[in-house]
Amino acid sequence: MTSTTANGKTTRLLEFAETSSVRTHGELMTLNYGPQHPATHGVLRLVVTLDGESIVELEPVIGYLHRGKEKEAEHLGYHRWMPFTDRLDYLAPMQNNIGFALAVEKLAGIVAPPRAQAIRVALNEISRLTAHLIYLGTTGIDLGAVTAFFHCFKDRERLFDFIDLITGHRTNPTPIRFGGVLYDIPPSVSGPLRQFTEEFQRSVDEYEEMLTGNRIWFDRNRGVAKISAADAIALGLTGPNLRGSGVARDLRKDEPYDGYETYSFDVPVGSEGDAYDRYLVRVREMREAAKILRQALERLDGELQGGDLLAEDRRYVLPPRGRVLDSMEELIFQFKVVTDMRLPVGEVYRAIEAAKGELGYYVVSRGERTPHRVGIRAPSFFHIQALRHLARGRLLSDLVAIIGSLDFVMGECDR
Image (tube, rainbow, N blue to C red):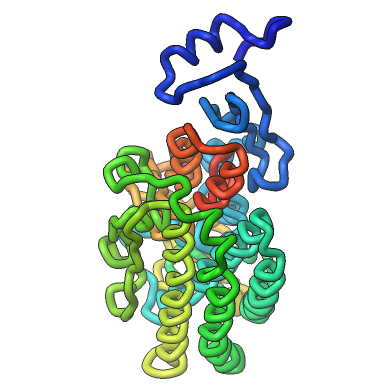
């Protein structure tokens, strides 16, 4: 946008006003919304053109958090880059680990053991719950529902306690390894965690009692930022944002991984494609995530008890940590795998159903110690481009609800 003249107008803005599908009635004003703003959910700048309180045009400006993650992978190599994936969607870091591990495993031709797959499913769904609770709590407080924020973070803190018990870390634990997982979930943890999944259903009842039928919450979200199924697909929306428009696309069902095809769960979809439907989809997905988590824990304590955590392929898979401390051969294997692992020549794309949508990794190998290329298909990157489409013609006060309903995080957008 160009700077305004004394009378508050410029030629460029006047030309835009004449051609825009949004009818304008007076002088236009350009407003910078961010990059430091509590409702932008990250370091995002929105250049908003206003006619009074109506949004005539909106231009997202990204890049303030760019860290060169994809290029770092080409220098660090496969194993040493794994912890860097935690910092993409830092609200669901273990899902980033799983996506990258599945891509490398597909190229290497290895499969994680059944117990390791069940642990991955459990960690995946714990991550989904923590991410959706962040959405519900922060969007609630953005729109004035302060009580919901505290209730959501109470349950989120309990989940972080379980993550700490399993991995020894609360955030960025990196428990996933190529060919399996680093940490087990013992019965001393799985029992209380199963109890939590039952109690959590009552917590979701409380969330819905506070919000679903709340007149203010309904009015702030219903009919706001509607997007049709066709437009959602054209813009590349995935996850709850796509399912809110009525498209039952879920990679756990359509392109299953880690044994998801053996779990019983439903895929909630909306009908209107507005902010309210996206809220309902995420609330129902929390219920389904708790169901999947309980099934995974029952398998770990039942038929999968005592199974292996890592595949036995020393070309690509790190030895269990206990063996490295006791065996010189295993120590040598670990050194070789970390410093000189070479995947077969080829390229692969593998995606998972992350909390925010389709999270995919494109890996190109030329048989060298480091990948030739790594590309990340981050759902937040696509969701941000929908802001312009959804905001035109709405009031500035609706922008907070629109941003919250898309639930993006800048860590994976500016990668």
